Length: 244
Image (cartoon, rainbow, N blue to C red):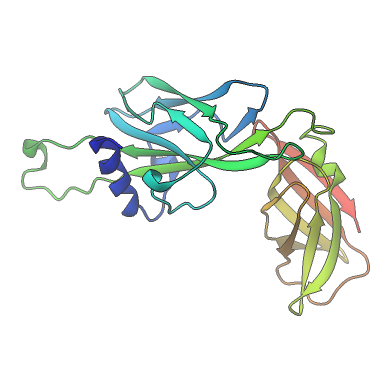
């Protein structure tokens, strides 16, 4: 790893929480779909700020606190480090290395990270001033999609199997996903007796199951309906309703 990469990796250890809305670097999408038939895929980074930005890009397999220098994933991000001038952009290429066999009957998930470090200010600019410079990190999902999966990603939310059951003495929504696609939610709500209850929205893995907490509901109703907003490949909304 280069000296620059080590310096940027060190900056991550001081990064506790990130608010991408305040960052100058903007990504061209909210998620990445890497189709197995493609040799590689790309994402565009744009500097919307007024100063140059030093940017590090990498992928992780689920641990947001992992040091990029120690992460072992079967993908490369190129270039790993770049300087983006204000009003300019940089295309990052993501390539599957093949050094790990991934499932062919379901998607695999990784996370694409962008760490933006502002340029060091000159001594004259900080003299007699209290200056706080922040590094911003953006992290989005990347889905590796094998060829030949049954159905489509947009159809997957309709095939989910829902029920309300007890878990640790509390009602939860149990969701089973028989498809080969990840299904991510923007919002879920349960409607019981005409009253709406917020549900912790998250993601259901392909061929997997998840339990979502229902806020404020007691007991296990015999009848209910579920309203949900799933997220499409392009970050759009897929609205659905299920009676259970």
